[in-house]
Image 1 (cartoon, rainbow, N blue to C red):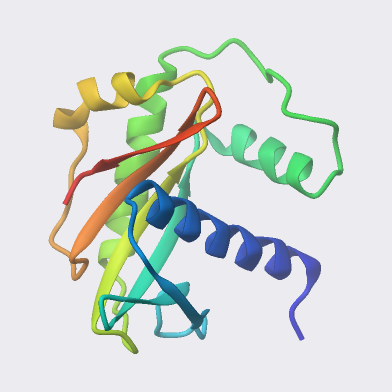
Image 2 (cartoon, rainbow, N blue to C red; image 1 turned 90 degrees about the vertical axis):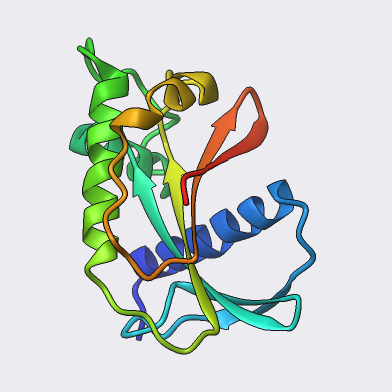
Amino acid sequence: MPNSHDNYKREHEKGACQDLLKALDFEYKFERLGNDKDEADVLFIINDKKIGIEVALAYYDEEAAIMEWKAYRKQIKGIQIHKFMVEPDKKLIDWINKELEDKAQKAYSGSDENWLCLDVRAPITLHEDIHNRMGEINVPTNQFARIYLLIFESGKIKYIRIK
């Protein structure tokens, strides 16, 4: 039986995928959540194809990740600035590269095509900042047909396609 952390995680994965698909202006039908074994996190039907979307989160560092999940679970009120951060954009790019490497090593089945959505959780980094550092993002060989960075900025959902 899933625990509350699993429920929050699954709810977030589905929501991030729907945010991405809306930002892309794609018509889609939610098929189901993946099996957490060999399928992507969420499965959709897009243009008569079953698309599996794997979701990963990108933060500045582990402390920022812990703080965000505590806020999401209402264990703390809001996100607090946790410390003076040196080179936050570089830290974010390093985390993105780590997630890309990790997800590239996995095999996914149960869909016609798989995508990766990296949900960027970095409130002081702008879409433009990431775009300007694209040369630092290393996309290893992988099975994803598409890879997107999903970015929330000033209440708007933005994305950058990196594959």
